[in-house]
Image: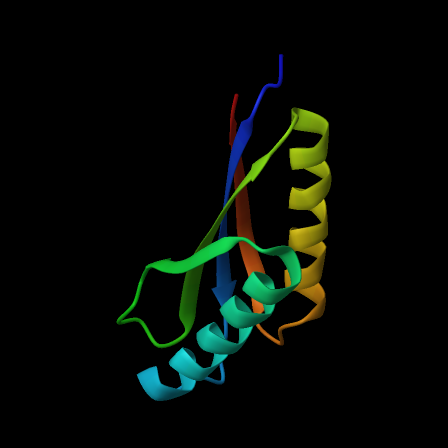
Length: 97
């Protein structure tokens, strides 16, 4: 029997140089497209849409088992840290089996 794992990663980023929602949208769009293309995951800006310097994105994906879900989550978090100038303030990973 295969156990499917649903993983949701919520990442809070801080970008102190952002002074408009247009600048913020460019950062969010770039990061979400990179994540979608590289990892085939669903990504949304899930909160703080009207706060210029705070970016909160949520990433969701399915995996065949918890070990694979953990591995993918680790890779995604590392990718975010290495592909944005924004400071990673918080990462929350939830797995449902």
